[in-house]
Amino acid sequence: MNDSSWGAPQGAGRWGAPEMQAAPAGPAYDVHDAQQTRPMPIVPDVPDAGRDADDRDDRDQGAGRLSGGPLFRDEKPQEPMSTAPPPPQKKRAGRDLRAAIGVGVGLGAVIVASLFIVKAVFVGVIVVAVVVGLWELTSRLQERKGIKAPLVPLAVGGAAMVVAGYAQGAEGAWVAMALTALAVLVWRMTEPPEGYLKDVTAGVFAAFYVPFLATFVAMLLTADDGPQRVLTFLLLTVVSDTGAYAVGWRFGKHKLAPRISPGKTREGLFGAVAFAMVAGALCMQFLIDGGSWWQGLLLGLAVAASATLGDLGESMIKRDLGIKDMGTLLPGHGGIMDRLDSLLPTAPVVWLLLVLFVGST
Image (cartoon, rainbow, N blue to C red; front, side, top):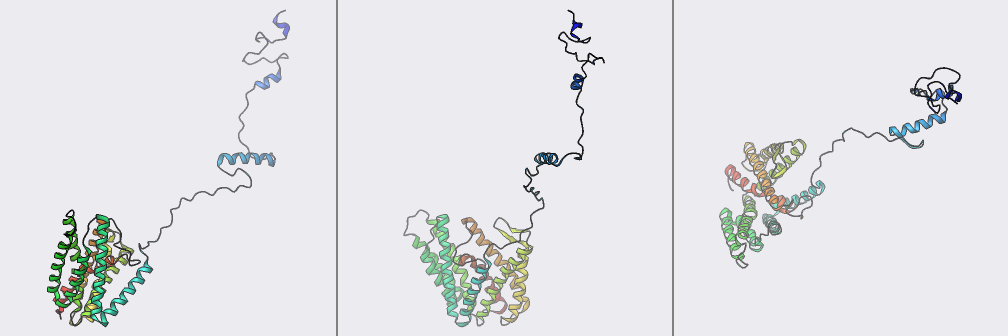
């Protein structure tokens, strides 16, 4: 039996399987097989017309999985993330302003009442401020640097220095300063010699920095218009600090001394100068006997400079100690020394200029 008896078409293999070539038309060729081997045409996507709702829903759910849409019908689509920049935040002060204002007003009331009622009471206020300031300074020196400046001779000598300055003037203040330094040297000898030099050096520095400079406030009080002079000194210093804060907070962009005090700006310094000069002209014209407005302009300029340098000076000390405030006695302010920083170096400047402008009596 030959191959033709199987009914295989010409060109078929041994077992009758068609070869991969076009098959001739004829009755022996199975049309159904030809349709199965025909390549499937690529049909593009067409609209959903003609499909039922379920078929469209199935396709939509599948597309939702691919495109990040909701997986189920009742699932809400996720809202796209906003790329808009966040709204700018308002500047905020670094301290509790309400507490700071309340404490400032309270201290101001005590100072003014003691200043205009009995001069000796105000001298007592200066002594208390000096002793507390010395305690804060020596405590921070010991805590942060291990420096033991003797507090007892500093406190006693500091109080004596203020009283001597009020009673005897500059000569009495200098004598009390010298005796206080000697007392510091002797007092420290009761302890081991290790660290003696740094301890007594810090003690003499503290005696000069706090009580000796504060003595000039007491000397301002000795003049006939002493309360007005002290009030002028306090007002100009406070106005200078307020002008620096207000202008610097609102317009400050250029740092004044970023390594020492990053918060201070050149614009704030200009504000301090402007505010202090205006206040100085008013105070000299209306508070000081024999004063003139142009003298007040010079006085305000000097106060703005000394107050800023005093603030920077204590900022330098606090940076070296690694602290923000010298104490926590005054809410919103820090410690006593944090309020005396600009007052202490300003006192001798105001005393000297007032003596030159209108005399010492």
